[in-house]
Length: 418
Image 1 (tube, helix red, strand yellow):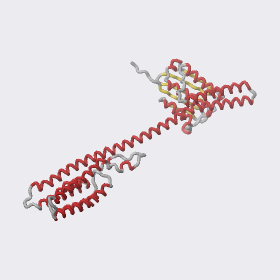
Image 2 (tube, helix red, strand yellow):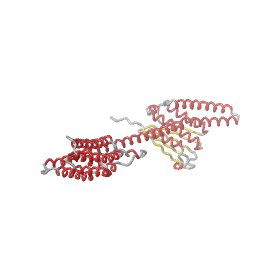
Image 3 (tube, one colour):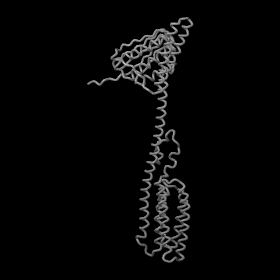
């Protein structure tokens, strides 16, 4: 099994061309050029020996055969250079290596000096062919070198036989080592590219998640602040118009003043939102007063009875984390707006209890109710997300014509006991 087959599948969102030329590393290409250079160098050395000291007819025949060998080898090598250099070789290299070996073998008919080219061919066949083909071609080159060289000796010396064999073994050791190194380089290159692709994918997903989270936060803030204030303004103005129709001028004037105050709060909320400033979060008695204001506003706007029951004292409210106080204000504002818009309730009770490991907020109304599993309005989703943002939870109990009870549990930090 190849290294690529053992690697995990393509990463989502990455182009399939990522690994198409992975093995065309500078390391592999440099080695391929080095092998060709060695072959050409040995050819020139052999041609020089054939022409020295004075070129004979046999010498020129050797040079001619070497020129033909070089031409055939060069054409095949040039075509091979167009393909990526890999660590496993290709059987297509036989198309130029086999004719080159045949031409080189004929040079021994003229003389033994071309035996030097065997060392270059050892590297060429081992590096260009797959391992099995390289070993077979190596054995063929070695046999031709030994037989061709010893054929010119009446009593072959040990060196004439051992020389080509030792050269073949050296070439085999070098090429096997080089191929192992090249596979490791290719493997590390592939892993590096896949890690880079994974990093880019993670970065894209992180940006998308961050954008979505920020979009949800902005939508929640707008819903819980500006949208609720605008709703109050519209309802107050509707009530003022109705008072004018009844000729109740003092009542209409009071409602218009309340609408102006709500508009001022809306403007302040909008400016704070645009400036990305943290809103002032009341604590202690201030938190109680802010909750009471929201309850009173809901009562005036909805023309129903809305009550606040806070069992926590000012010290307990003062100790609430800033994020919890802010969440309580926004939750009360959002849940009361839902009651005003949808519940048609005559009475609503808001209860806040602080103690132990959590703060409990209950908003209960006697309105028309609904089926929680069939309602997925943005207001309730926003309230649930608001509670979850500080580690809390929101539970809804409701049924048609049976009112609605919503409980929010917000965890409180606990001091480590000594």
